[in-house]
Amino acid sequence: MPITRRTFTALAGAALAVPARPQDKWPSKPIVYIVPFPAGGTTDILARLIGQKLGPALGTTIVVDNKGGAGGSVGSEMASRAAPDGYTILGGTITRTRSTSAFIRRSATTRSSRSSRSR
Image: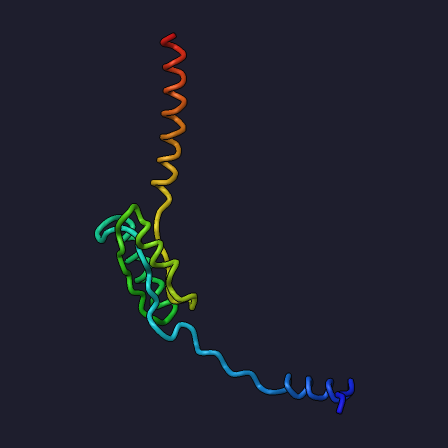
């Protein structure tokens, strides 16, 4: 028996009329704030200060988890492999990246100007 357009429309409307399942209230568990540097540093202190303010604002606990090593790569990889459920935050800095790139550019320019002067 073929389904007519009228039957299909009635079935589709009935399927849409089923009430949606309510989502869990977020956050319903502690949030993990991963700091990709060792404990006691500036990034750790800043993460703990942020956690003290953010936790009560969200109504949950913020757990600061220091995963130092490989210039931040260990903690960053851990955060990238975390479940995509909104309960993991990655903190960090960009100062090393910015200062290193500026140093490399400056030292390369300095080297080229020194070599041209020595000729």
